[in-house]
Length: 387
Image (cartoon, rainbow, N blue to C red; front, side, top):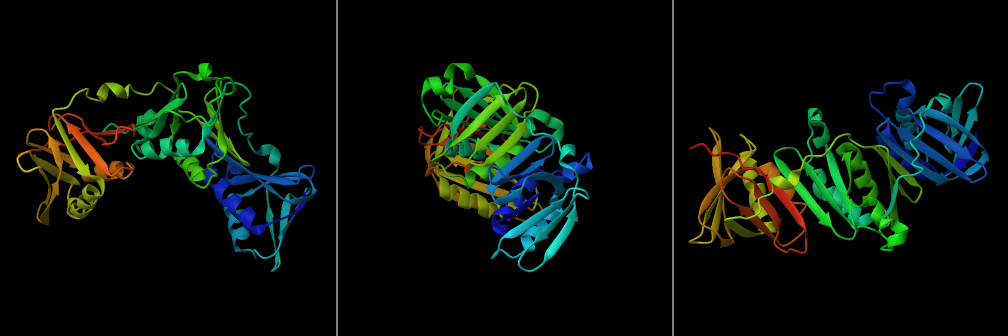
């Protein structure tokens, strides 16, 4: 292998693929990135794969001789990041010793790799479901629900986000058992041509993807050109996202996701509308004290004054209260929440006004946009108040 490439482009690609390199590899080669060079296409390809998440990025290069090698991800990335970016970077592989030499304007470095044959192949999806998705909508579906997934590995399925495709839309949902975020998007397909997108083949199709892997997809989509589609392929427990010169593969979580819709109350006796920014500001201020004890805040609604009072008490430390003017259609009530849960959910609702719907201090409460055009709900289980 012999090639010249841009230091800055190689550095960016290495940073991205290294996110899929295992920090505790079960095999030495999984601590490496796979580097392949193809003289016929004038491209090099970098791959990181921890057997659950795979990231592959291609970039243009001047390839004199094709070849492949795996190199220690951490060392390779740190060396490249420190090299000069104002001149091309040369890379030469001695196939007998598996040693790579990096030559830049300022100097040269050598590192020993492992043969490419030892690196596991990224799963290829040849059949199954294939969709073209709107990248902006897909990013919203992930970002709006990802935060509500569980971090407890013992909960398995709850550590992921469930995506259910139906018609031309998708329902994204995540829960950790204490809260639930659900977003419905009606037009996630990039192209509405029914025949091209095989609408009938994926009605009610559902997959659950690990949140850790989806965070990398969300980061990738945030820097992606929204005018281009993201291709999604699903087959036999494997999902592949392809866009531009990047490929991300994710192994799905096995099992049936809980029927979360049965948790959502059909009617509510109390409905209160807040200004979203005012509510978040009040919660952030009172969280300073709530964080000192147990994160619990109480909301007391007075229908006579249309005022909601938010209070917290940190034992032996202090207490605090905030008052907000609201629009109410309810009786007076009191309910308590984990303030961190509220803030995480409210910050993904991008509307001016937020609606709180609840029945009693012990049944699920729903936070949602007042504008019904935004089909998002955030269910939070209240904390029981002990008098």
